[in-house]
Length: 260
Image (cartoon, rainbow, N blue to C red; front, side, top):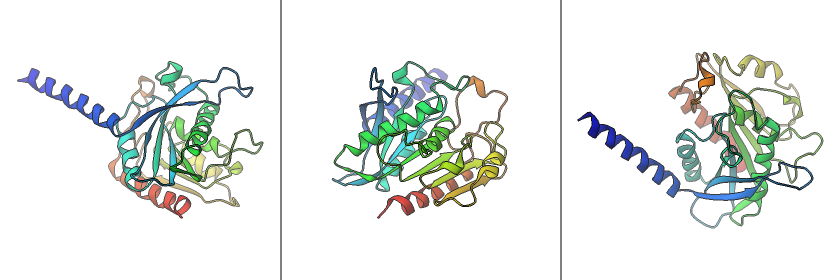
């Protein structure tokens, strides 16, 4: 009996994977790894678009430090699609031959920000995407990269700025140098990235919306828990009420800045 249950569970997991991939298109695009244009890394991403010709607003999605290890990324992308957004879920690790950076931080945050801008350039070339309405959204390591992607005082990134950014439990840094609106969603009890640090770094006079929501009694990974041995010793757990509220706030924020 237990063996039959095990087979059924395996079958269901395979079925979920097939359904997930069938609802998205896997595409390849060029990275921005090297500033001199030599030996660019080819990256991949999963593109999920609404029905119709568009042009639609779009969102570049950056996974956390253990990669695309949670089917929730795809579920959230499909929800965004239903709301009229093109969702582009980037795989920063697989093409580079790695699965996890929770212990060493490579690719660095600069690479993650470059990946976001490379994805934005790719999206801008598609006829069903409005290049003036592209946002970036990230989780943990990817959230840090999302914040860096809208910090460009020296114009190191090509193309136009992102229209907005959403960062779930990021390491906050350089919030005074933003060139787009930012929504930060983080737990009060986060012992990996500090909510207090984000609060202390909030700019007082930014020309853009900079919104910080701190969830009481909530830990890191409340939206998508991170599957990594390097998180042992740190609280890293799903919180359904925080996730529901974060989704609502994210949708309101995106609609405000990306919907015409």
